Image (cartoon, rainbow over all chains, first blue to last red; front, side, top):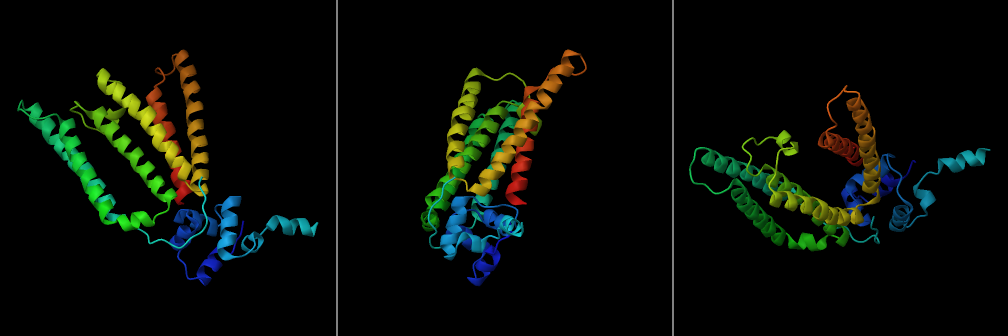
Length: 71
Length: 209
């Protein structure tokens, strides 16, 4: 799943380690989410949404929704 | 998996010193144990290599305690989850280290493969190892799995599944082949090691790729 995590992090000038500390997860977890190798759990997605003060769907690109809308 | 609210960023702690202390301790344990074994082999009076290695281990633990005390502020700045995570991992590593030392105690052939031989053990060492492995590892790993983030949890779930298949596929196949006298008797420890290796490879791949 695509996401804007890297952009949002860069806008705040945070390193992956800093973001990981704020989320209380490992740096590898942040890297895996940013590169799309791993989709976060719902609790972690909500934590991200609270941290960036944005709805989850603005951070994560719901490709399935676009396909659904096309039908 | 443990979750908590986002909070202020914490300063990351350098891990160079803990790694250096650990490596120096392991190296010194090997040197001391080897020296004492060599002395004993020449018929000279020398304390057991387990005692020597144990003393070095205590010095290593003391050095680590001094280091942790010096960086106490960093330690306190860590979240509860992160502290329990590293305590559990350190505990599991220590259990592995002590188990290896106990398995090697009294052996002259100090090599990796010797850890998994079926040679006889004294009852006291066997009981200590069984308790250390079954109780000690269960407790530390329970703490560890309660504190990992969900990315690492996912890596473990797949690694555990891969390790499971690395056990259930070769074990019956080997057993069947042995019944037809096409293979030697199934070696449980060899299958165990294979399963552990597959588990570790998958975990490391998913965690660090």
